[in-house]
Image (cartoon, rainbow, N blue to C red; front, side, top):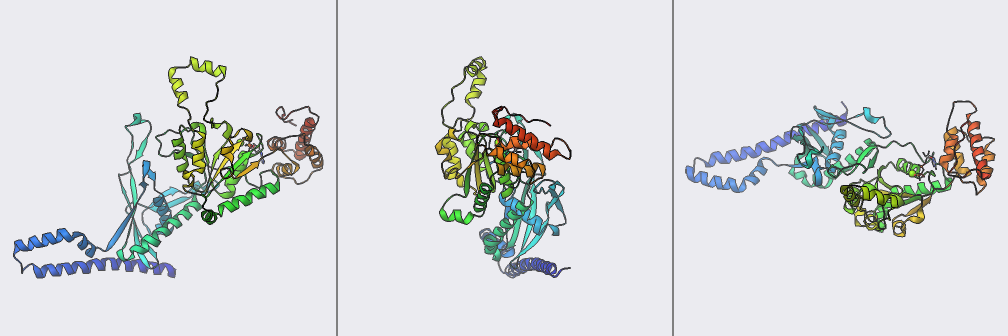
Length: 500
Ligand SMILES: Nc1ncnc2c1ncn2[C@@H]1O[C@H](COP(=O)(O)OP(=O)(O)OP(=O)(O)O)[C@@H](O)[C@H]1O
Ligand SMILES: [Mg+2]
């Protein structure tokens, strides 16, 4: 047995002995005083005084007999039965540090990054288990307790609309000697949370959250799937200098916790990605998330009924995340004015049921000021380490207040394909760095009148067969498409891929 483990066992055993020895000597003292006094006093007087004494000093006596304190960390806490962060952190810590000493274990799937992690298990303490831990020479004991027997029932309210409550309440109980109180509260518990957070980060599978399709009685406003987009900055086709600038900016943000605190600014950063369709705005968001190892919250503004709901959504996002609002110009009317209806829409509304009209009125009432408040107001500072990204095809349509620096700190234009961009796409799609047709492509792309998006170029370079001369045929297809544009025979909108 390794020496370190032998020492820890010995420490734990010593702790148990010390715990019971302390109780035993205090109990023996009380019994001794009792046996001395009882024959000397009249029985009624004795009972009266002893009764009063016990009533008054019961707590202090209990303290003499049992000098141990407990701290309970519950699974659920606060509003709407939110899962307690501290509980999750303690669970992760215990599964890593102490669970191997437990005899009864609970197994959960430990999802890891990048998919395929579903076969790993996280082992946590089973109900009623006790394990010890040693911290700076002090021994503490952790107990896993549960109540409710794991019953699940459907709410009788809201028409029983699928709201299922889990009656199983779990908690961890931490037991320690009262002389370690300061050590536990000031150092040990923060250590448990810190270590637990780090373990959770290492074990987590990144998530793509959405608020669309939810109902307001769900425990969380967000639902999610595993985030598995393969885009990276290596595969993202754009001017290398611009790409490096963005990566440096992201690095500075990720490592900037102390800097943001020093300058008195919330730890968040806004990016505005603008450019024509198919220039890689969504691809860039995926690359940013993969680069930073962050989750993505994709906000569907049209599914948010009010500013209050929007605020709740933002409060429920966690740190290390990118909050995305795509096509911000067409999400909702953020000027607060109602858009004029087309004659067709007006006729349809007139023919609709009265209930439909009411539904229309109750559609999203998110306002510009509501949005500004969550991304830049007092609420925006909750949690920290968040990036907010807006994308748009029409930057000119946006309200200047929405995209001013400080809200959207970095404006990135995603533009049409240049030769540098093409070379990255050719490397991605055809695995080539050079080809005799590259010169033709370069000459054509140098012509400012020829506008082709990376999405269109990518489609030309996409493998269509496993032929040996595949690269040549793909490049020839691209050259033909570019020549067509040069001759004005095709516009960007009408362009279609020529299949070989
Ligand atoms: N810069 C790029 N680098 C690599 N691939 C790209 C790039 N731009 C576009 N693509 C390819 O084109 C497809 C469409 O790109 P993407 O969805 O990112 O465009 P977008 O700018 O978000 O378009 P929209 O404005 O219509 O949402 C992607 O699946 C990707 O394969
Ligand atoms: Mg997009």
